Structure formats: C-alpha cells, structure tokens
Image (cartoon, rainbow, N blue to C red; front, side, top):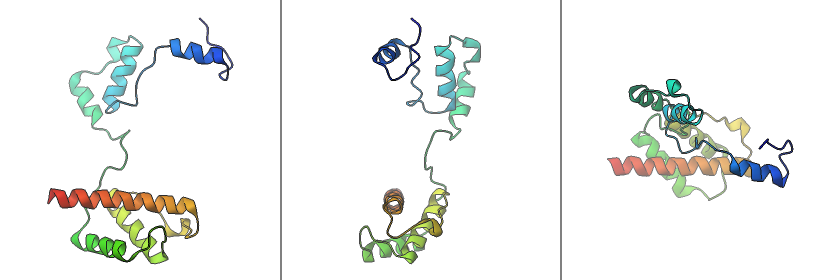
Length: 145
C-alpha cells in the first residue's frame, strides 16, 4: 500500500500503524542504533561486530548530563547554605550566579546570568532544574563517600 500524502488524515495514521518501525529511543548508544538500522534495512554488511559496537556505544551521543566532575567540599557547603537560606521559587542575582557556577563546574554546561530574569517563569524552570540536578549530584556524591 502506498503512503497517503496528507499526514493529517486517518488513512495516513492507519497506514503508519502497518509499517515496521525501528526503536532507536531504547538504544544504549551509537553501536546499538547502527545495528538496529542495519537489521531493519537487511544490510548485514553494515552491522557492526561486537567489539566495534561496544566502542561505538561509549560515544555519549544520546546521553544527557553526564557528570564532568564532583563538587568540592566547599562547593557543597556553599550550596547547602544557599538551600537553607533561600525561599523556594525566588532567586537573587547572587544565588543565580552560585547555581550557574556550580552547575557549570559539575556538568560542563554553561549558562549566563544575563540570560536570566528574576521575574520570568522560563528562567525559574531552568533554575529549578539546575537545583534538582545539583541535589541529585550531592546526594549521589554523599552516598558514594
């Protein structure tokens, strides 16, 4: 059956259900993705050997927020002091700078305070995300010690 041209139609959705799909989302890494695509296309020559697949899976292409380094004891104390004295959902310029600096140190992802607005909900969501990631990191770091 030929694919309907209008993707908004019921016919297209029914046709799509009949098509074979390749589950890339549950793959571990690049090696798994290449293997699944090669299998789906029936191209055995392109499928990687186990050794190459393992090497390719070590590439961090699909992974998010790999920890670059742990926080120092002084950084943990600063963060805990910030958490103790801060009001949830309200950030001052100094506290935003502290969060951004700690996050950049730990996850090697840099934000700039000039891009944040203390009254903006988008900035608030980003800062909440940064706090939750730092909380998880510190908890993991303390459990590993």
